[in-house]
Amino acid sequence: MDRIRTLGRTGIGMIESLGASSMLLWNSLMWGGPGSAGFGDLVKQLFSVGVRSLSIITVAGFFVGMVLGLQGYTILVDFGSEAALGTLVSLTLLRELGPVVTALLFAGRAGSALTAEIGLMKATEQLSAMEMMGVDPLKRVITPRLWAGMISMPILALIFSTVGIWGGAFVAVDMLGIDDGAYWGNMQASVTFYNDVVKGIIKSLAFGWVVTWIAVYQGYASMPTSEGIGKATTQTVVIASLAVLGLDFVLTAVMFGGV
Amino acid sequence: MAAEQAYVSIRDLTFSRGERLIYDGLSVDFPKGKITAIMGPSGTGKTTLLRLIGGQLLPDSGSIVVAGQEVPKLKRQQLFELRKQKMGMLFQTGALFTDLNVFDNVAFPLRTHTDLPESMIRDLVLMKLEAVGLRGARDLNPAELSGGMARRVALARSIAMDPELIMYDEPFTGLDPISMGMIVKLIRCLNKALGLTSLLVSHDVEESCSIADYLCLVSGGKVIGFGTPNELMHDGNDEVRQFLRGEPDGPVPFHYPADDYRNDILAGGEG
Image (cartoon, rainbow over all chains, first blue to last red; front, side):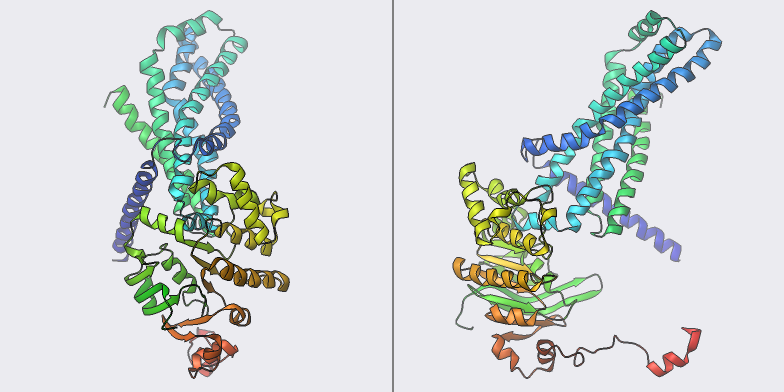
């Protein structure tokens, strides 16, 4: 009986959280476009969320590209198709690994920072002080962060894929001796702008929206204690990562067919 | 007090947190232009009362009227408008924005709510900082301020928009005697100079009595005493007397409710 009660309570809690986070998203975006709280705030958040994530995205992208190059080579060489390595690396990155790995790194780097920052603002009564000054914290704090996350993610994912393709080229051309022309030429012949690049961007837009939404909600709804903020930060990374992977399957099924 | 106009009027207020009933039919009027200290034992919900007046919490039932407006019935935008035009609040921690320096903290409400040119905002901010004696600290960051200084900056910020009602949440807690003296002086002077209505939540009987026109004692979800400090000092209510004289035992017991002491000890390791 207790288990059923616990299950029911957990279910109701999840539905409540979903409702509360949807209200937060609705009320925040009701304020309008990216610059509704002032472009200064948006630029500050773009720097904090986007620019500060550049180093981890770039380094990770390069390594992922190099690993793809190596793994792809060992498989393709058995079939004498190592010339197709450029195609394999670029399609894998643009369609899948670029948006997904960027989103996972983004959740760990920027998402957790957003949650901690907003949670700490709540714990130190900065959000309450804002409210009592007649300033809506949703407009001032949440809206610019949401937009900054949604704008940054696709750009970071494109940078990840670009650097990854370079990483693949470094391994394939410079280390394994695959023909330079074959690597880039096959890639140009097989990658299409709409099917691969645009669909990858759509994925990263969706991931950026989900990760930032989860991060700001977890911070805004966190218990205003050090334990509460720690828990909220962990929740952000866990929930956002799972949401990204789940959403990736759905988007892949819808955009690339097969299901 | 009967002849004085109430700026904040609360009737039959009921509020609970989960299963715990905080206020049970509380009714009180806070007079306009006066300093009223809200006092009572810890955990009675004094800060909660300020948050209810400010509309940050919604009551289960009852009415809270501030400046003629029924706070719980206001829409989100109307509530923000009321706060912007009429209310200021000083938080216990100061609640300064940690990413802004002292000047920008005080300028924040002015920059957000007005279209004043930067030169005029500068003058206004310096005037507010001069009033709290911190004009020279304008370039410091919140992390560089002492507790007392942070509270004075927060006070300057809360009067930036010239509110009619200002609420102080435990303004004396954790301050050294000099800083406490400064805050006491500022509360008294600002109230007089700006014609504010001030609500002060505090445990410090001496300091509160020295500046408050009225004391409002809250306990058990109700008002157990309201009057001038002198009136309440001579009040016949045991609970009022215990609180104001700081007696360790009385209607509010020294011991947290527990089983019989003798039985508890003799029970040995069973418990």
